[in-house]
Length: 473
Image (tube, rainbow, N blue to C red; front, side):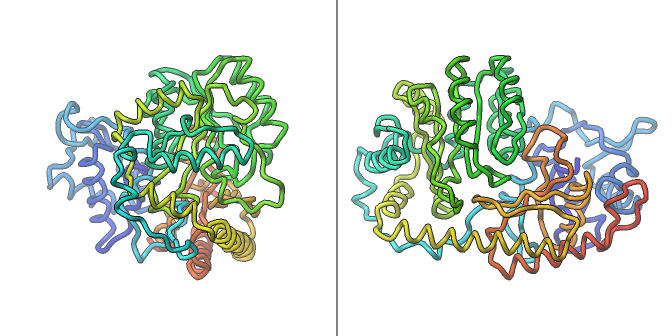
């Protein structure tokens, strides 16, 4: 219910009316099914940290509107037949909700890890002739871009031909078509835990049963990975680094061990390297895991929206030839082909002589912002724990207790959106964690931390049994 409400406190008007509007919107989206039973007034008040009177007033308004109904002796229900409405669970977590709702000036959004700025990129020109070629109008993608991706992968140790590359509408589509290629409803899929939220949504849409395996500073834990593979899952999904949200890399040793296990057990792999260009670690670049097993059924997924900026929705999947041919057929059922204009722009940026220098300059800026956010949190919130990552776009922050969800509500009332582990994990292991992006400008980071400190100091989140009113109610 709380996830369905999203950032309901943002807006103007009394709290009860904002809450009523959020419930109505959740019903209209299908997040709350027709006929579904709603929490009691007291339970919902505790869950969203408002007084019971606020929920009573909101429910009264919703009853008057005909959105919900009270049934004597049974409880409160969404009005209408349970057969009416959209099936639930198709829209992803609250993180995706915030992407759809967009940014507001009143809220500093630390929950979405994307590159909004493009000021460090060189200027490029895309001509009509670059996108009007019939050869470019194909689900495979523009031939020149496929060749450029193949050269880039070969240069980092994964020999690749253009015939093994499918251009996609972002890495998210790459993950989705790979899941569609290998996963049937009910199949078990191993994922790193925590993980990129988009993969959980893609696997849910495919009907998979997720088998989470924890990660540590060197990547996915081998002992638990071996146990998960013993059950012969249909697929393994791994980020080899920088990992989202931890910012670490899968070690060289673990890559080699996991590659051997995958071949021995004949388990396909999705290797997510979407954040490889957002990496400022001092260590030499590691070969992709798939480079250890180049002919194994492995889909290597990359992204230019993470390499350049969020608005460039272009990615790729690299796989052995027969697998690539199947992936492109699955992709064709999605969109028949990605935007040729965006593909031509990605190619022009990759071929620009200043491309590498621009990315290095951008990464230096991001590294400074990461260090700044770590320092600001250490000063203003010394009970919180985090460390500077090797790359990526976010910090994985540990709170003093399992209070992340409750604090996220308080933070939003103080004008900062943060991401809990709800969209990043199917387990309850990370209720003490927040994912905070450092991709915003430095003034926004400073103001966000000041607001977070005010929210934390004004709320008794450390002792749920001794609750006092949260500031900003």
